[in-house]
Length: 129
Image (cartoon, rainbow, N blue to C red):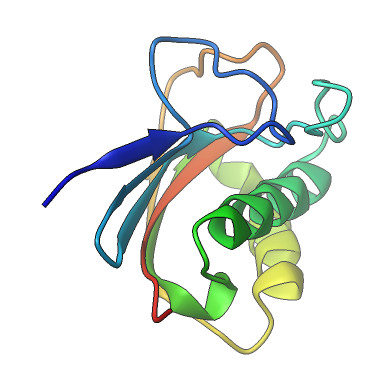
């Protein structure tokens, strides 16, 4: 099965040698995504709440490129710099995901490549279309 990789034109450029999205049949993988506004390339805000909301909005955009939506997400990994941001990350995440609650892992990390980022997330989804 061929693997298609892409970075949609509406997304910011990756900061390394990777694509934002890989697709093999109905299986979708989205790379680590910080809370960056795709139009400006700037962080959505200095706090975990706004950054988490922006990450899920970016997921929505990327999934749409592959013919999927948030309800197709199976698992999310969250890499959080500060455990004290857990509640605010959850608040923004839950507001954007709504009733869909895919499996999730949260790991605290020492640092992230994007300056100012408080977290990054990646996901696995299964496109039904």
